[in-house]
Picture 1 (cartoon, rainbow, N blue to C red):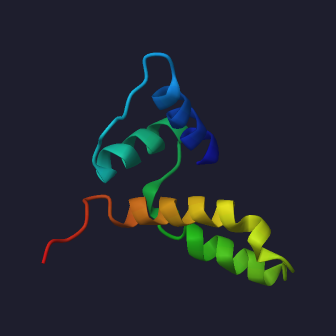
Picture 2: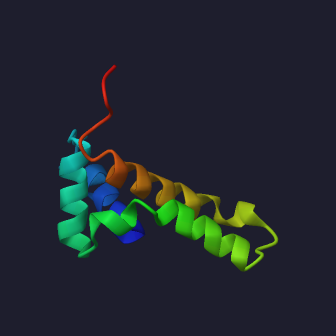
Length: 87
């Protein structure tokens, strides 16, 4: 997931890059096709990483903030692939 995000950021920041606006479903589809991941396990990425860090009794969780942010983002994109519900 991190490598996919790095690639996407390089594309946007490249010489002919620009901001790309796409739906969560389109972003998820592109990420799944380029990384060969499945959407269902991504829904639980944050909770699994959090559980792993607690199980390993990591003393300084602040060192893993960037990784937890990526896992949280992946979980949100996979959970709300159709977008947020409107009330």
